[in-house]
Amino acid sequence: MYNLILKDFKLGVPLIYLIMPFLTGALMFIPGWIYFIVLLYFCWITMPNMFGGFRAQNDLMFTAMMPVTKNDIVKAKVSVIVLLELLHIVIAMIFGMISINLYTNITYYFFEPHMGFWGLCFVMFGIFNICFISIYYKTAYKYGEATLVSIVAAMLFAGIAQWIGIESSYVHDIFYGAGLDRTALQASILIAGILVFIALTVIGYRIASKRFPKVEI
Image (tube, rainbow, N blue to C red):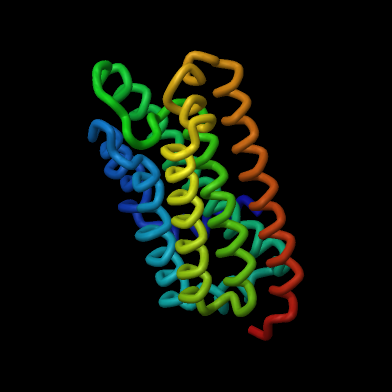
């Protein structure tokens, strides 16, 4: 399993994709920006290019010749996706904390990068994962449809969440008002988001594990 993950990183994850979290994370320093976009760059750039690279290198045929099960192949790919997502979100969180301390007197029209917001980001990545992983492993080769559907789903969630945050006085108070000072509330939203991320990713993995064995390589 470890060797499969290492193989995927060496063959399909160029150094630029490990630098990307720092480049996109630096966008957290734009005051009052739509910070969902910082993480959406992973969906827009890294994922389609990474899986395009796997396809160009005929990774599927190469991996199929190794003494591993199809479930292990799926698990390794999902692990790579999750590790890169965590890298993006952790670096963005660090830059976000610095940004909050830098800009102390600005008005946020979009979500401020507090714990509750990061909980929503985890949910967004979970939605992206369940869509991409389950659709991609219908063929384990064609990634266009999976990329399109998962990006649209993630962007819809981000857009709707942000709209509700602006329009709903209750949600607005949680993410903009007095709710920001309630550490337990913010932490509970973050933890809930992480749990949803894990659940959706695991569901996506299980769907893929059932579909991939039916694929003829």
